[in-house]
Image 1 (cartoon, rainbow over the protein chains, first blue to last red):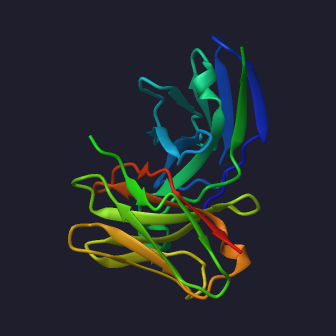
Image 2 (tube, helix red, strand yellow):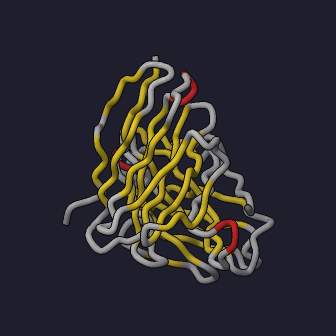
Length: 114
Length: 111
């Protein structure tokens, strides 16, 4: 499985933007970039995903580098409720041994200060 | 709409016993996956089921098994429990190739 590298932790102040980086230099052409987050005492929650183009939804934006070797999850205005562990995951859509599974790394612990 | 429901929420078992955990997916979701989460290993994939068939399996010993019923509900079983099996067990469901919706998990403690 292609691997991702994320910083162990990041901090932000409330109502400020947060940029969470992810490196995935071994990404293949069939890998989608997914972000999930896990709030305390809950299961992971889908945030956003993309393949090549930048993506926006109500929760966040995803900026993908032109060579696809890195991406950045952008929270436009962090709130205290955004404090969580954020996971950047490459999801292989080509099938094979990666079918149906998400390979989680250690993720980035985001702390949001009031 | 109802989310992914896992039962029980908490469980305490003794070494050597076996345990069965249950997962009810979101209505219409036919794929169910199971994950184990521990402080040391993080989130690790156990297996995924679709249409009552196991489609993929992670690197866990044969003591870990699962099944899926015709209504898409799934169970996972762990036999001969070890202390190291203490973990949060998470179930996730999805529709087709869509994204995963996770339950809140079952916290298993083996003593």
